[in-house]
Length: 256
Image (cartoon, rainbow, N blue to C red):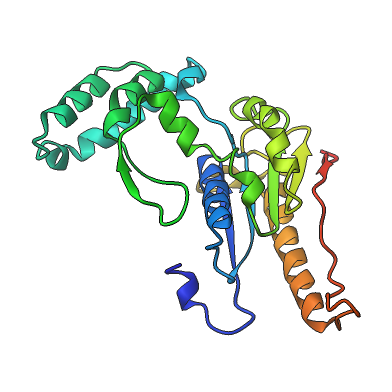
């Protein structure tokens, strides 16, 4: 809302784009706001790439989980001067237990009681604590709220995404229940790969190249903008409705 408040003029729009957990955040935000009817009219659409949809750190790959846990611990230590000022014994006990964890699931189970959160419906009241890590991630996952997204949304997923595809497939029904959501599933691309070949050699950062997902994202945004423009120009029919075409949810595969 702070961003959309700065958009002036009838043709100024905002599109939300998220990758991986960012994609989950975008979908959850739009679903919550859509459920409450509080989405700004300036938000014209969204693109989510590699959205895991239904997350449970306790079932995470045992190779990735300890590595991600080290990252969380590093972030905690970087903010230790602030954390140590929290005098609540319950809080400090949870932090000590979390710092002794090996996997991300163990971390979340230890820290869940002190996590802060908001209710998913307006007025989004402030709350503190979850029963365990599973309850935390169930609240943080976007799959239950995708059906309430009120704006055109492109959901892009690769079938060989070893991190997110299984969860995406299991929650597929929530997406197709919403006519505002278009699903594009590619046969390859991994987790946020989608690099076009052959890649170019960058003299500073090694191998680089263009991404097919960037093209898909911009094409989708342009299509939404053209649809909005057509809706403004089309005269209403005898029922008072514009002749703008409404996109139906569909699943396709890229030729890659």
